Amino acid sequence: MRLWLIRHPPPAVAPGICYGATDLPLAEDPAVHAAALRPLLPADVPLFASPLERCRRLAALLHPAPIIDARIREIDFGAWEMQPWDRLDRALLDAWAADPFRFVPPGGEAVAALRARVAAFLAELPDEAVLVAHAGVIKVCAAELAGEADWFDLRFDYGAVSLIEEGRFAWKNRGSISANIPRP
Image (cartoon, rainbow, N blue to C red; front, side, top):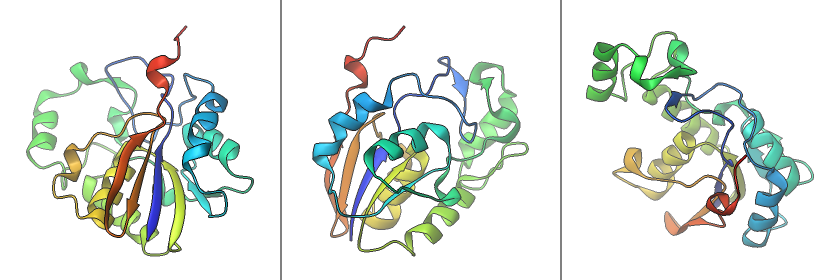
């Protein structure tokens, strides 16, 4: 299997805010990111994208017919969504830190649930595909397809592409230009 994994460009959200499944707009022009990514991607394979705007907008610029799949949306933090991290209940944050795979934020989902839905999605993929998704989803792909033991701690840059090929990462974090784009 060959899977190109693209993390969406930066969303328009203040630093220190918890977000996952919230449908946020992009902070940067996705056309600039698409131009940087296009030379790194195959032209003749299907492209799958999260239904969230920050992925859909980039996907539409990279492929004439992106396939939207809700199973690759970001984790849902429930009541924590759009709240400052430093204002969340400390005891609940500690419980999450102690067991992030099974702990469920109020009204949200556990990392184990994220992994299960992404694994189900991956089981149906063709041998080659491009994916425009979120850091959490890409980390699950790293665990499921590349055997990354420390997948939860991996870093994937905004607007960058990584390639999993033959059960390992061929390369990571290419094509990101977010650091070079002036912010308003």
